[in-house]
Image (tube, rainbow, N blue to C red):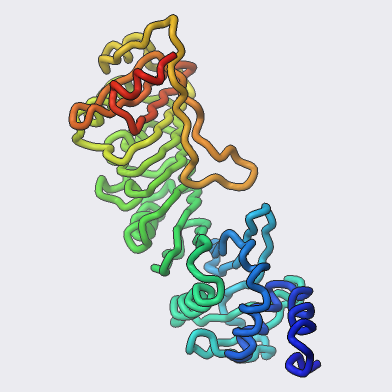
Length: 352
């Protein structure tokens, strides 16, 4: 079938009934075809909310597109070249000739191939093409699984990582290299028990972290975190750690960007009243209702709550440098700290 022989309305209808993965492959054929697909499918593409590059532990990348209506579909795979197969064909993508193939075992999904020496340039070329094809009005995410493969520096791309089991020294060195060589992450999930990260590790610069650990090394997050939101699950934590954290925030010495922090411990180790007295909290009259601190999460995965846990507390502290308020709540082995973008005077006006 020669598409150009049909009237424009027929062309548009044919293209509309094609899968987006097929449209992408067809758009690589020529500049005129790319222009036709962009112009005729503009309304369809406007419903796309994000392009996600999902990197697996082997270094292969699955490319997904999500819509604004909770639709999500894989549209491409970027994987290591397999020498045993001879079914590749070449296409020009953003000025780079690269090998493609159609993979039957992935429902005829199109796959771009790379050699170890040109992986970054292949990914960069495809991403440059997407930026031109879909524009910069949608979100672009790199979602790394594991820490063996460094995240490339790509324009307009936010990165997240899920890191499991980093117990031994070799893995810790790899983890440090992973953070130092990758861009600053929007979100990091860290599980199990790593050794201590360097105080200046880029891990602490992540905007948001979720940490599940055994032991008390996790309290380093209370000293070095520079991001906005942190949720930590650990065995126990000492009162002095919480006290030091609050004092450094109150003085303006650290945690300038912090919005929300939650520590959940497995064992009772801190007395509630002693902690609140130690950090010198202020009190809202018990007969009044304090405002609820709640924020959109930096990153919420499908099916998860999209907001931080609400904090409703009669106790708060005030930062000296700008008079900003943070609600403080400690109950049921959970320490919650929510920073308001309000002065103490503005905060107290919300009390009912």
